[in-house]
Image (cartoon, rainbow, N blue to C red; front, side, top):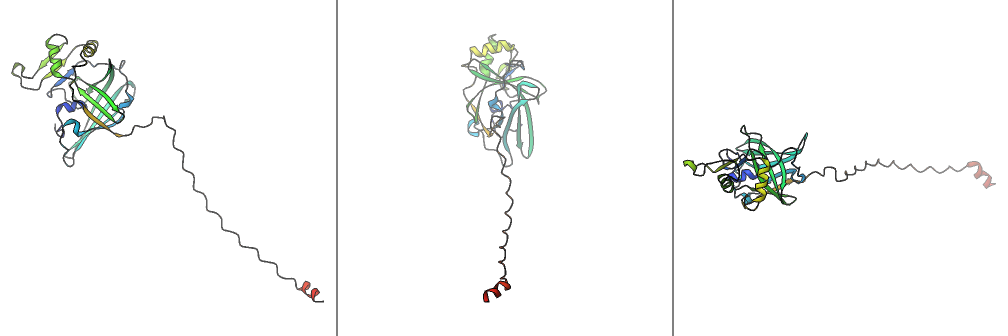
Amino acid sequence: MRVLGLHPATLAATCLLLLGGCGGVAFEHPLSDDETSQVDERLIGFWEPIPASVDAEEPAPGDLWHRLAVGKVAGKPNRMEVVTLEITAGSVKVQRAVLLATRIGDDRYLSLLDLNKVEKGYLVVRYDLPADDRLRFQILDEDVFAKAVDAGELEGQVTGGGRDDDDAALTVHVTSSTAALRAWIEAHADTCVKTKRVTLRRLVERESRGSAEPPEPPEPPQPPEPPAEPDEPSEAPNEEDDAQDDE
């Protein structure tokens, strides 16, 4: 899959990391579920990655940077969804992912489930919004999670990265429960994510969602003024009166 020169780590930040074959950390369980997740209204809107933050080449003529639309899911009050769009060589590609937002300690996280994949697994990223029109992601550090699995701190499997003569990218599949994951991440908040942040910018202002007064309707056009009535003619002189004056 060609993604306009983006590093695979950037795909995680833009909700497009394919969990198999691209390295990274995948989870069997999310950090929160439909009961415990919290919708973050600040995420709702349209976004695109800022090229300078991802060390990416400029898109080729006719190609389009990823566009992301984040919104709520009907019937799921605690769930959000992201839809991504890209155009490569004139072809459109659309992907969808479930977003489950939560807070652990002072940090906010998203658990993402790619709805386009047959093999299901969650991707987790840390995020923050330094301004209303900026969204930043940090991906988890696979080296840190691989060491945690090796040490028995987390349950799971580690493949690639030169292990067993496997030169594929290092991939960690964590099978620990949601409660165990949350506790471990809170205890290792300073080291479990990579320091590099990928930044997205908002493309369209969010709708007021009823907070602002509706605009006043324009005033109707005024009808044209009627034409002025002509002056009444003066009365003609009375000949009988003139005769009397002559006498």
